[in-house]
Length: 437
Image 1 (spheres, one colour):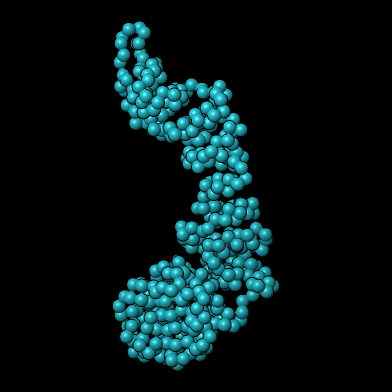
Image 2: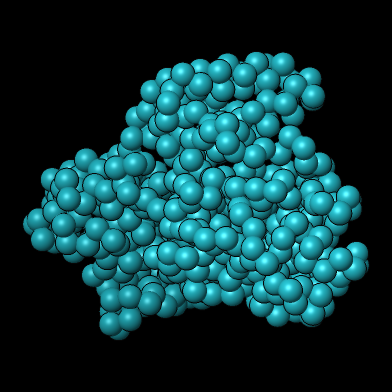
């Protein structure tokens, strides 16, 4: 405490970093303590008789005024001084919204400040409550930068699932050229049925179409495969007694049949004769979706790689011309082209339909190593190869390795003939890829 004389009674000395001083009433200290929370002055020891302020007197004095809730009228200063002081206040850690409210800075000055250091203003808006104010203050060239900062992917996707997005919000997001994040893709995978339900609720409207386009960004799914997934979900909703969604799914698929780009080739093999519940048990997953399905002649390797690379829990199912159905499952992330999937403890190959009258069976590798090979996008010969098992070719007959038993636990004892009638050379009719989640 300073001297007990009447002049200094109940006073506190503020000592600034440039060795200047200021005397303040002690009764205001409690108010200042509360107001400095969240700023760089939060760690100051306010109980000392002499309080050390880690700032020179000029900017520090204005911050002390702020903490004492004494108005500061920026209009008293020149334009450059207003700009300098506003940046100084932000440096103290004050939130942008409160800084604007306290200083009552005019919009024309704020516009100039955005041209000097927009990044500092954006970072200072920790409560993210000044989006509209900043958008109105910045030039057209910086508006997208502001919008990107305030865009929250998780919030947006939650709104999508809840059916609360509109065309304006979808158009606005599209204009930002935002790339789906890995976390965003995981969110979509976890909430696949809800995402599909939100889309079919809007039907074949302009809004529904734009919602599907967003869904495509996150899944790379074609309209044909989307319709197939709607059909499967429709059956699931029907079995669960959800008549509303089951009816919407049926309507959505029926209306798609009239669109040539959405029709599904009758040459495609389906999952009709396959026990999908068994596939779920094999993978330990409760749900799946079709992310790729093409006849062998229609396969584009770029599309195939785009569909599977970067994803996990992927099952490739091969439909052979002789009626055999077999495939491979990978549990870890599939790498980009020209790479092997390595040391996948969850990998196995399987037969679903064969000429040996053997029930669907899994075969695990004898040791961890290379499993699935991803070919480069411009490779014109093959689609995919499984170490010690099969290689699917684009323009020639495919093959199944005679050394299968050297790589996998051949629990049936039939060698590669368990998978296809003629392992040395066989014709593939189509490929399907399922993603489990």
